[in-house]
Length: 409
Ligand code: HGY
Ligand code: MN
Ligand code: MN
Image (cartoon, rainbow, N blue to C red):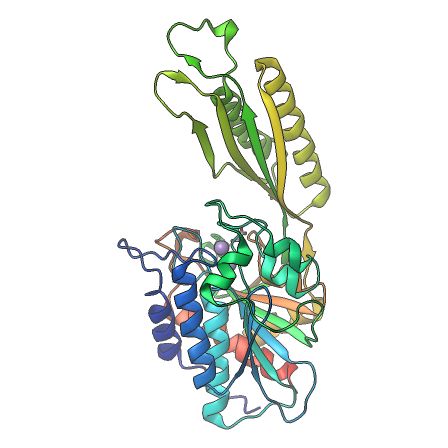
């Protein structure tokens, strides 16, 4: 491929801004929770763009969408992709950059009349975020055969809807088969969502792998009682046990140190009233670490603390694993190519692990996979203020263009 090809940054930014209108929040953020109406609208828009670019679009039984660009030869495609669902307080770039960056690569090659030897594909996977349906990334899990289709279809969202029903409702329960597809290599462009690249003045991240993820839901059942008349020794306060677990999770992460992180993102009390001892608490704890042994240690210590604290308070404890993924290392030869291509383009590049989960984590099980990061302003993501400079978006897409064109020859 001609080495001087570059993406059209303005066109990429225009698509990112247009997609952000689907599920736009009044405060400038984006809410496209998986399989909701805004996700459907975003899906319809991206499918329309895929077709306008001459891609052959297939939709599989869990709603994953793949746009295929023919090569000079048939065979397994080089795939670009990510997700277009967002968390409820999402930004313009998490997921969207990988999908629309892929479309920008396709359009750049179309404009230049370049047909690669291997076919190319641009994909978006269902429910990467896992905010509404757990586990996260169940679209790419099913796509790669790591989760049974039926199990994903049967999941029930936090708002009580079955995934199969929502897929039917939005018209994305497609005919294409799932499980162990033929993909030659997978490259995902994504914003870092952390502070490292910006803080150290790098433009490109050559992502070495993704850390392990452990999501657990704790359901605590105590006894509602009068806040004023109930002596402390008689209480079975689910709210207290929930709060104690949250404080312990934070202390545990600080004590283990390194890459260990712990987050209590959801905590719901019932009846949630100022003068009633909480009868019930339902909460989630998200633990992550690049080191699986330390992650297992954190899980064990948290579970022991929760059991001990609940028992001492006379509160019933039930736990449910919402997601559990081991750390994944990306293909070293691809990581090295991301780094080398960034240097060829005179873009400051750093190797680093991904703190966030990504579909690439799942694709890595069936083909050589890698990721390209661009900086996140202030390291902020899963926040309406998520921002990446236009020149950095284009730089990431240029690295994607070169790497994918190389892999497709
Ligand atoms: O939670 C994550 O890491 C991703 O955003 N689903
Ligand atoms: Mn993402
Ligand atoms: Mn995300």
